Image 1 (cartoon, rainbow, N blue to C red):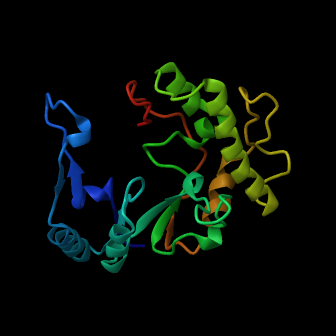
Image 2: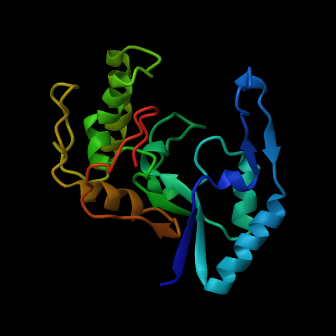
Length: 216
């Protein structure tokens, strides 16, 4: 198996939003654009020399042409289970068979809640404690529960989960999955993705950014 190199926030090889200290308006802060052809060229050259596969974390605000360019240069993208919805269709979970081929499929990342925390809704409660929710806790929990259950229902429908796995009684105390590994395996195995990140049972985050709620 070849070595692999992950590039976090790979859009940073194309552009970066700078907010100078003391700048009055964030909305008018400049975006610096880099020579992405040179940056990606060096990355591809060094990866070739090392015999390594390169995976770029291309989540968030990334223009479609950036993903196309990375694919053309042989750099894989990243697909996360909880983000894969049919946004151009009915908004339901996107079947793994329709995921991108040239990417690494994963259940979560270091910037997202551990799977156990996500399934319990801990990330919503943490943001509420930090005072960064834009609507009430009840509304956030309801929306989060609907999104989570849509994916779990999809996995149950595919026969990847037992019928009662992940179902909740009180939305503030969701029933835990009996086997979290099943979620990862069910998500990654049927997809055409070149690589899949399938870990063992998730563990608590090492630390949490108390300002943004990001997990580390």
